[in-house]
Image: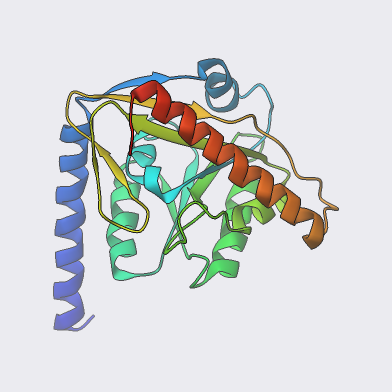
Length: 231
């Protein structure tokens, strides 16, 4: 590694370290209310379905959702191959996730194959993975098919998820990402999980894509309503 790459790597390591600890201190003060606790525990704690899980959210929710799942084992997250993605990947690793690099715009097929390998190599243990399904650059709240294909190919449950907060900062970005303020309360909600049959055609997959989009919007509206968030 030459000096320029060494310095860049050191810079990324330092920035990711600061973000990790800042996030822990900031979000550690936030109270969480899970609206669908029975569903959450069945899928992620007791794993009554005895199957892997593909979690789907809008990009708006990504900041808090990574933190939310930090205490669970066997989780992977798809992160873009950009420079910012490298920082995010290192932060996610510190929170206990396995980062898989790629997105719908760069390395998507390779990343989906790596995600499938991760889910299928659990040797009977429940594994889960996820990524914002309207990322990495939008358009906002328009579901892409990648994670649906992953759920179909691995026989995993597809689980829509959203969060909102009583007091948040809403970034002026394409995704309108929300950052919960310290000592606020965050509402987390889940849509009903579903599976996609392995023989589902690409044409039939479009109906599942529309279904996922609708459910994600419904869950988002529900957590916003519970939190009193008006956007």
